[in-house]
Image 1 (cartoon, rainbow, N blue to C red):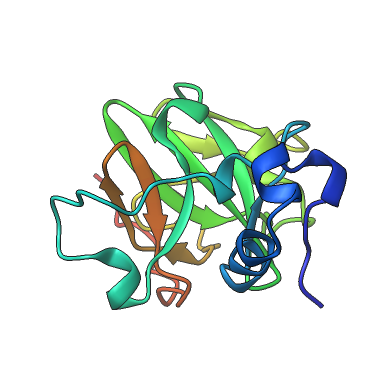
Image 2: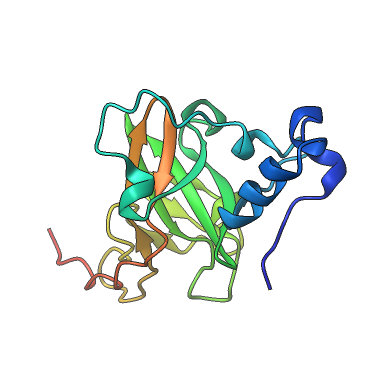
Length: 166
């Protein structure tokens, strides 16, 4: 079942326009913020890149909505995805920790790794692999930034192999 925002949290322009509401549902992605609806207001005009929507990417959120070294969590085709911003980069990973299903999106990037807030398990944001000697991996998603918006490919990348010792 598709998670979706409550109708009352949509901006008035979306709430009163049935075409925009159906567009919002078709996107299959919804921010989990108190003032959701921001994901329905993104512009698709003036894209510098080859149109990400034509390539299957989905408009996730504005880049400015993601705090540095933290995440914004969105629902993408029924799966929760954590989008992290760190050191001028963006990475999208599954929001579920492989240890005990903790919410990775509520964690932070510490020492270059996404750190689960429940028990401190860590994953590299680029490839979803745990640093050695651990072997747990989480799924990642391709991202693009176009016009200040973060776009995500809803098709998961296969989990990466665990990192080799350095």
